[in-house]
Image 1 (cartoon, rainbow, N blue to C red):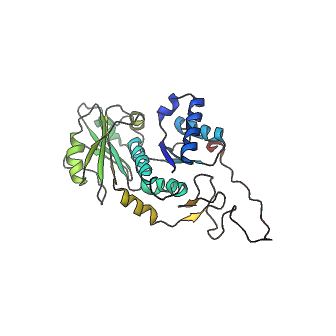
Image 2: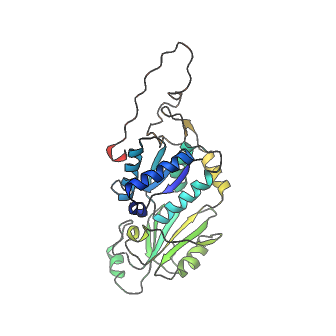
Length: 282
């Protein structure tokens, strides 16, 4: 059963040696590890995870970069941990991270957008954020949205049944729990701790972050298993998508068996060339 972790700034608080030991122990227990990391290549937490992976010199860690707000990334990790209890293999589970991210609607209620750089901010919104008492509704995924938070103007939400996770600090969550939850027809409102990266990601410490997500593991399983699967030609893992996220092999020739697969006697075996990762991904 593979393990799934969300890489955050908290990982940087650990000495590198301790994190390597912890990761090695997790690999011994679970066999494979799927790490959900920020999309930015220069993000310190993501670079730390690549360093750990390189130190362990293994193809059993898949680092999946995702352009998601912190709360959405945390909830996606939770969904994948639920799915890890099913019959899905590690290669499929890693690919499912990208697939299921499309079903997350994530944003925040902000007191200021003066330092927000995740969605386009107009000059007018910058000026309004200087006025005390203004609150802004922002959606960063799947489509950017920015507007003033009031009962009559609510950003578009999912067209399917979801639950709404809410994590806040310093702001009244009433608009999220009221007008937004009603407009998005959420089935359940769930309060969760604010992720450690949220203030930096949204550009302010006064915020209420929210994410609509599918909580039914049966529906998640159905979404993942409806996608075509292939076998990685290098490591032999079953995968979805166009690349094995463990060994970085592109799934180009879908008809070829894995390099390690048994061949008929007398058949010449080509020596495979190991795919090379970019320097910052090693």
